[in-house]
Length: 157
Image (cartoon, rainbow, N blue to C red; front, top):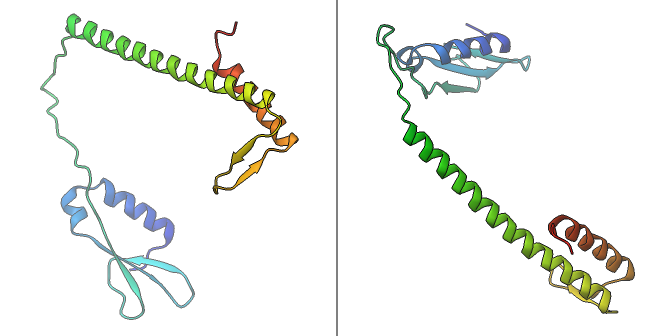
């Protein structure tokens, strides 16, 4: 039995949504014929190269009784506790972000001070090679540092 690509897609969808016992028992073969057409089938080809595809069941639906109703009770204390935990996590995150912003602000301000106060600046590139900044590179670094100050220094005086 030869199945085309679109039929194979439908075939795989049926396999995926069928029960696990049926899916475990199906073997699919894939091969390319003399006309370079990819074929899929359940019967092993007599000649030529082919691949054997197996199905893996990764999900099995949980069966529920329709007559069994579940009642959900909301405990106000547990909701309040979760809200307090979320607020604490948010406050901690804001404090950490504020510290990171302060450190980035200070670093950017120091870069600007250094770039403006020194005529020749020696830097080490990613390969470990040293070179002196050109005027254009120095200008680019000053602009970049100023953008960092604008971003991270929220309480500029």
